[in-house]
Image (cartoon, protein in one colour):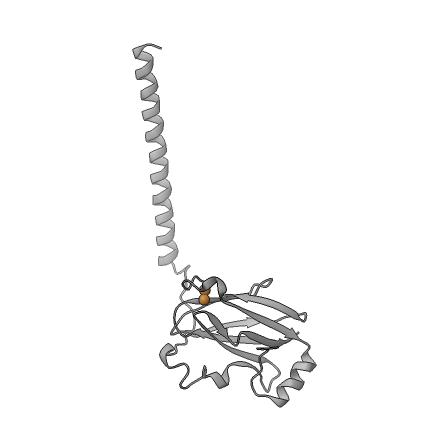
Amino acid sequence: MTIEDDHASADVAARTERRWATVSVVIIVVLALMAAFAGIHRATMPQARVETTDPSRLHLSGEFVEANLGSVLEANGAVTVRAIGQQYSFTPACIVVPADTPITLRATSADVVHGILVQGTNINTMLVPGYVSEQLMRFEKTGDYLMPCQEFCSFGHEGMWGKVRVIDKAEFARLAKTSGRLSCVGQ
Ligand code: CUA
């Protein structure tokens, strides 16, 4: 190795470094332009409908009072489920629904951002305090599904689990006759 060789390889290294620095700057600029383009051309649309609720008064009045939580069979045969997420549980902790039925889940949070995810399905929504999250669901088969909180909501997050129990349609209709709001908590 001579001194000239050393200079030559230092030049090569400097050139390569500059080239890669340029490539990474170009990638960042392209991504920023794509984000701006998508935003400006409304490729990222706001929600069509936003429903709000007061998280500090959920338990006092309105749709999410405790007596109104759980599953209810509507006159048209569909089912509506109302639920709340709070640090660190869901109410009801066990949601019971019939198989082969259109179900509307309506849920919100009483404190911080939580998430509802039903394992093995594509049911996945965030619960944001102040907003009502609505999610359509349908289960073809009966069985139990785990429902973990999927948004980090502080230290008890990993212990925040619920369950969805899908039961036979006729059985659900029979239960719905005797009780207004159904859940499978404690069963
Ligand atoms: Cu609630 Cu994580």
